[in-house]
Length: 435
Ligand SMILES: *Cc1c(COP(=O)(O)O)cnc(C)c1O
Picture 1: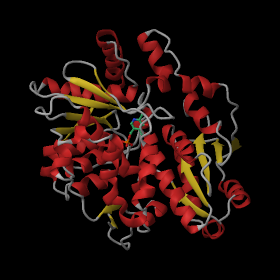
Picture 2: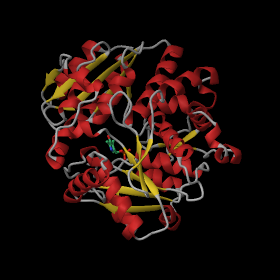
Picture 3: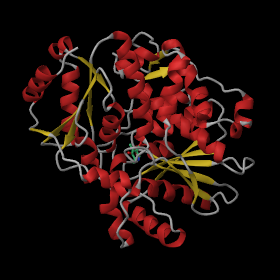
């Protein structure tokens, strides 16, 4: 399988090169030359396959011969080494819980897969790589955890001081070993800018082998298909094909679902559930794509004004607006509505949503009111505890800390504080990173 750049100005590459490069040199996103069609029997008999078998079948064509199957098998197994339950909330809405991984958000799946693939490629090349990543919250923890103690890989995470939640900060700063957290006295955009500048700096690139672990990397994007297939395995009433609501920010997760659908996964419709950052729902209404500056909301992991994966959505539907509209619907949900939904679902159905899942729930609920004979599920993308400061006042109760979080709070925080100053950041990299 080869990958082309969505800007069509760079050579095609295999999975290994796409993973190592992250973004194509022409600044386009890598996209597979063809979308594999899964055997019909695989779909109709999905209940008889284990989760590991499903995941391997889905990802193998994308990886091709860059990782031998006997090496790919344990990578896939470790990636999905936790549960993915489909939990009913009402008789028409369920939640596919994606927060049972080590950092309590769905990003664990992509980060675990990518880190293991990169570790395999690095071992082959006997080079040391430095993974540079800027985070606004969940990405940093998932990447840190995924790469923790991996031989040949150093991880440098930049995060905006005081602007991530306390649990997110603990997840970034307490691991140590090959993981370093730089606490930047600025915003997420400042962190992102420093990282971009380093990638463009030939002096640093001569000395260190830099790579990025952000969500446009194919090795983070494509394994997110796994749990859409798991959900179908668990979906009881196969005669009523599900509607799937995906809380969306950068649109990587929903794009993975759309790829699964193109490979043959039965899905009635996808709902792009957005907060006030609603340029995709607006696009679906008007046909015009107008990115904006990000607006801060309660579902902060979805505060993206210009979603990078939008170009991949267009690619999936071959730039055809009308075929896209047949599969994808978008809704915008306000912070007020998000709070109401958390309270209502907790009181009436005894299910605690996190703010991101609540946006997904509100959108699906709105859709189902106009489509009385349909049913569906939301992707519950994070554990509510990650946002306890938002949730506890809404439900007026304390939330019980899961074991993984209790353990975290007893660890010591280690971060290197730094102003928004490129020279200082560069000095750090030059002194600490090499091939
Ligand atoms: C990252 C994130 C999202 C948004 O996912 P995209 O793939 O960027 O659309 C939604 N919810 C949570 C909890 C996240 O961490």
